[in-house]
Length: 151
Image (cartoon, helix red, strand yellow):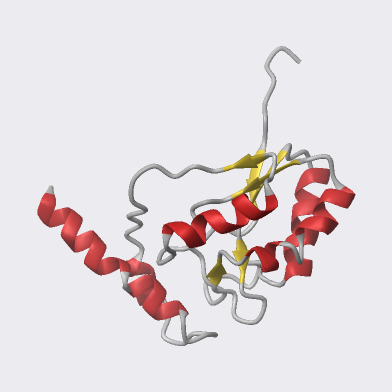
């Protein structure tokens, strides 16, 4: 092959919520399984976010990462990339905690603010699986409005 490609696979991300897709993994065993499957399919880098195992809400708790990382490391040779993006409302300390504690081979580095304007996604659903989802998405409307006014 003349051109080499490095495939990075983000297993959960931080934008989607469980109501948006039944395929969003948030239980540690599901994150591990999908990460291992991605590596088996050719992903060289696994970009990982953690989610509350009961509700799917993004979390920066290192203990949650440790519920799925050992299985991934044992089953793959993929580079582990822990996010520092975390979730929309996380503090800098919450975003850094997993990478500082676990010391993965790679960690994302988000420069500046994380201004996702995803409030319109909240309009697509009238029923939610978990109480945190709609406010999580809707809260970005204020950010979007402030950016629009600034521009």
